[in-house]
Length: 205
Image (tube, rainbow, N blue to C red; front, side, top):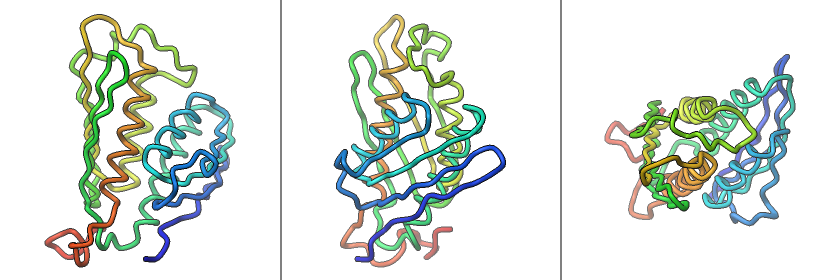
């Protein structure tokens, strides 16, 4: 099977991003190198790649946190879509649940070419009073996931459960990014019984 990989390249007046993505990677830490200028974002993307068995290198620089977040999501989604090629033989759907102390995060994806992003928030992120990530607000982290889904062309559904009381958003987003890696690995993996594109239309675009 042809190696499914894509270069990560994006340069604007505000941001410059370079790297490489291999979908059928090793998942080994030595093949994951992330440098965005934001330690907590680096950590989340390492978790995503490690648990998704993706080899990912990514270096980004820019003027504002919001711009870097937005453009990384854009180029990562575009690169993942490019690496999938014509989608032949993939499973298309994936679901994963990851527990992290007081939080259980569940992520479901459909690599069907259409964008949809749902964050099912039973308690309201306003209750996340222990936000100890130095990156940005929880709302911007959700925006990152939405932009990633938009440029990858995926239905992305995220929900979580927690015990009563305050929860640590560090744990929540760590669990979400781990589950996202697992779900995308499942959805992008090759199903040997599938001949051609996993759509009755015969095309995913």
